[in-house]
Length: 588
Image (cartoon, rainbow, N blue to C red; front, side, top):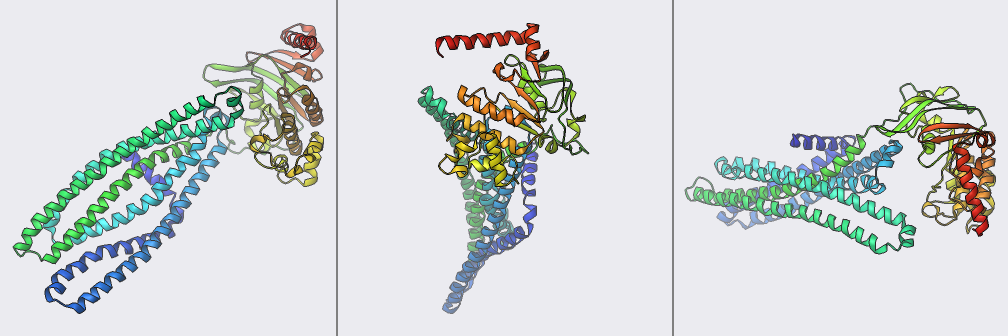
């Protein structure tokens, strides 16, 4: 069963070669021609021994010597064509596989990213796809070349003396047995190597992206130890693979040596008894060497391919992952909406049996500001993830202007929903490019207008290169408030009809919060806005405030109405109000 799976896996890998079949065909022609040159050489040696040395013909010897040079020139030409064309096809397939893996990552739901480490995800596109290059280029070239040499040499040996060939063939089952046994172990070892390499990438990614946390807690030595531990695991996994390969090569050589010894003994006796000529025996021995080297190289190539198949398995496992959130068959394009959003008895669970939202129902009117408040883990951010279909509701329905979000295309839905998260994510590019991300066809004037509306234009002009200033990884070159205003400018440029603000000012200081809140107030005008609030003082003017507790909608009303009810909202507000008073008294 495992053999069949490996075969299916390699066949699936080779299917990616089909678009390049023309180049592959000419690579095959070059391979056959280059291999034919190698197979022809023993025949020349046979003629030298049987005719030229016997007849002492110097003139023929000169022609033979020149023909050997011609054969090697011929072989060199076709070897170049073979290697270049095979490398071209292999590199193209690797690029295609990397593209497919990246495209798959773009289509997978948010849940996939929540459950997998960033380093592991990156490893699929970098390390795993990179490992396929060895199988599809270097080893594939060797596999085809040595395979042709092996088959042609066997044919020539049978033609020369089929009885003598039987002595050689007796060693084949042992060679195949060892290749099979060690191949399984090498593939298993290769899978362990790919897993450990993914762990290294993950540790590296976490350490680099969290360098401020590392340094603030003085955990440099801890991170070094953590990396070294994973790095050592990689060393041990690789050495296990090396041991298996190191054992396989000499075992194959010993078996091959036994075959050559049998040929020498039996063939020598045949020459003595006059059954074959000395030249034929020399040619046969040359072919025997020709097949022992290919067998040895093929065993190494197969071992390397087994290791690469482990990487291929990881890539195909990624490509085969289901896409539970996708456009329904016949999904319609959502027209420009007014902004009526309705949750109808919506429930949701991230994991079976762990209910996060339970029977939540509410309706927003166009242009309303709806705020969600509640203790941590109450389900506020989950609601924000369900509306644009980052997650799918377990039960109930969500409609926008009466259209069920499951019946419209995700592109048209998300195109009308703008999100400003708590953690602002900017790309490692210019300020201009980060704002333009909101609408790629926007003009320079529209980008600057969005920046002005977000209270960002002035500080952008003060940057070293203005709008063309590079922000660095995740925008580390500017402050948190500035990053947030660029994110708001990006959302303004998108011009969404529905807006989600997920605690957009909770991580800012008071001064930055004031500037950002002013930009947010401007952004919310005329849009249906859902505000997830940490500081209750920022949502007192909301049209409606929905209070969540343990996934249930427990209160609904304006700020004044909820204070008068003296329920959970009033309790939360009182706690924050007292904290603010204490800070003012202590000068905090």
